[in-house]
Amino acid sequence: MSRDAEVLGETSAPRSTDAARRRLPILALFAAQFFSLTGNAIALIAIPIIALQQTGSPFAAGVAGVFATVPLVIGGAFGGVLVDRFGYRVSSIFADVASGVTVIAIPVLAATTGLHFGVLLALVFLGGLLDPPGDTAKTVLVPDLAALARMPLTRAAGIQSTVQRTATLIGAGIAGAAVALVGPMPALVFDAAGFLVSALLVLAFVPRAAAKAAEAHAGADDGVEGGRNDAEHSAAGFVAGIRFMVRTPLLLAVVLLVTLTNAIDAAGMTVLKPVYATDVLGEPALLGAMIACFAVGALTGSAVFGWIGHRASGRVMFAVCFMLAGTPPYLAMAFEVPLPVLFAVLVGSGLAAGMLNPMIATAMYQSVPDGMRARVFGAMTAGVAASMPLGALIGGLAVEQVGLVPTLLGAGCLYLVLGASPLFIRAFSGLSAGATRASG
Image (cartoon, rainbow, N blue to C red; front, side):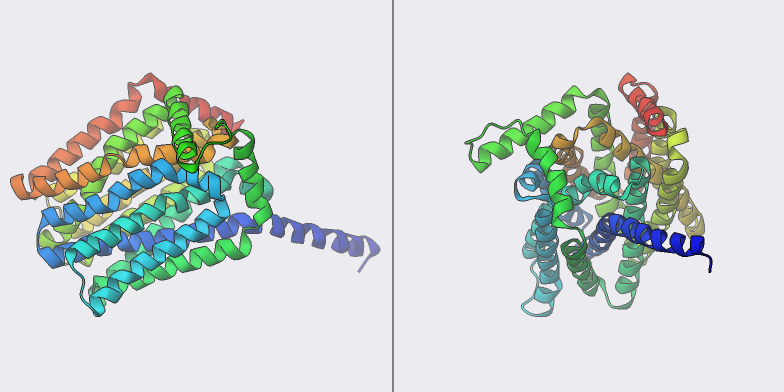
């Protein structure tokens, strides 16, 4: 070996090691998000089926959906401020551990003393209450850990969305297989295990120093006066997040659109799709296959956006993706298309949906200053989840009162109208500006 080669070897190895060390925290964070969201995907399938099996009522499934989504509003309202107060890393770890405990309690009680429907609802409520702070804590760490890894923010947002979609795909597959082989209760054991692994990954590989650097931004820009108690601080922080969101036209427009479509999605996930799989397809386990098909498309869409999205994203692409993400699956179910066709529609719909989250995340990261991230993200989580309990409840009532097919047709048509709105609302023009900044 020549002397030049020896010198090159001596200098490149430390640089390579240093690069790997800088990337490790964000890779660990993405892995933690994967495991926690995989657990959520399992619960998303198992809980409605458990409710249907216990009661035989679509309305009961809707009530379970209410108890799963109301906590998202409460947790989103105060989660961001609490995360600011207790720290991003600690909040993420605590939320994952506590969520795992509430989830594992469901099959344990069912196997021992018995599980009353009211107890199921209470545990679902507690688990949902803990999700938003944990998710917010992980999300607000992304920009700083991306900067540490020298990763472009647009790419980090695309990878994050890809991780989310992959988690949904894997979780749906695990849940579908578990429901088919052993039933929905044992599937929740995998859910709890995912939360535990997530907590361990953040504990072991996301360093305190990296988390404190992100938290320092929040402390520097904290507009809440000293001397207030925690309740006053939380309220003031939440109001500050709401105020910032209302004063930013693009963020407000996105929140309103996602809030309305989330009501439809909540009805779809907690009532319409479980009832369709159970009553029309005759096999509850096919709910997992339906969600997995959507997740395959969404994963592909997120990955594509991560590489080329900054060149094409804008309000037209946003509107087209929204319409394709929501409308076709409901219409396909309403017309009872053959199962292979339904699966193909779900893959195509997921492909469009996979583009949406990175576009929204990129716009948020670019619009929200460092010190406001947790509060604004928490306020947005509460805002977009606010309609979900109502959507789940109306979905259950609609199926029982007017039938599944009319409800599916109404959901599809309403989604089409809402999805097209960015083409006509001026505030969404900020998406095009964001795309220009991202590519610059």
